[in-house]
Length: 114
Image (tube, rainbow, N blue to C red):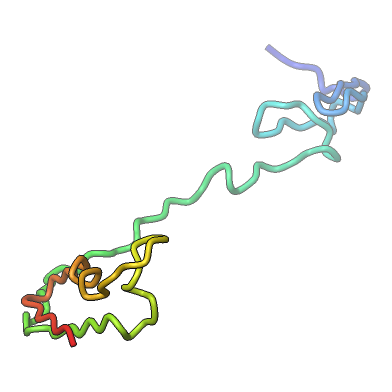
């Protein structure tokens, strides 16, 4: 089947609805038939490039030596830090301090209350 060359033909743009010469029409990536002055290329973000995940884990990881860790919790170091339970003041700051917990993955922890 043969087609005409469209030398004198006009075509309607899908974007603006105006008539343009048939030979100056192009098809966009989304299938719209538009004039070359209205053509918009496909945005690069519509086809993102493949991006590998960043390496996070270590291949041959070893935990740190579990030497004893000494933590000194002084209830009087921060004024008022351990002396209240919400809006109600505590009578004994040492009682409030005993409610605190210290967690570590290094090994044993020695807590000294001065």
